[in-house]
Image (cartoon, rainbow, N blue to C red; front, side, top):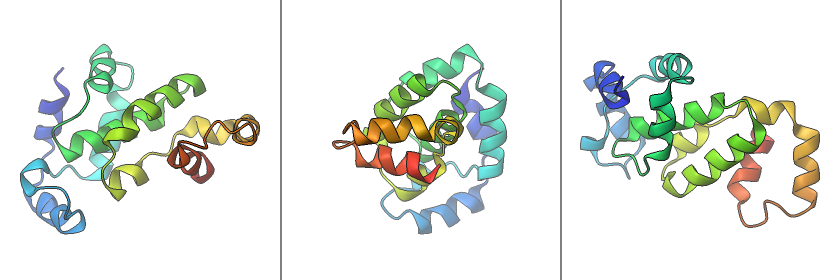
Length: 137
């Protein structure tokens, strides 16, 4: 499986044109135009595939839609520590509101008490966006 090819197969040019208006800091040629419901389905389908681990390590991505998928895949990670590592590795490449907003790791909802202890210990002072992600979840 080639994840970039999977995304290209879901391309909707008119949706890419629409997204270009919402994310003016992203050049139009870097927008494939994958609708979010389709990207969510793809994330759920490929989360356990070995190619996905390679995709998550292969940063930076070229396309906006790869970043959206990356955020959705992070949201599916079930292990808290692995999720934190994945978020920390990906955050330097989050360059727009849509990619930031798409990340909502489910594991953060389950461990809020654990997170609050870490927050009180100052774990997130240098990474406020991580704290915001966890609070929003």
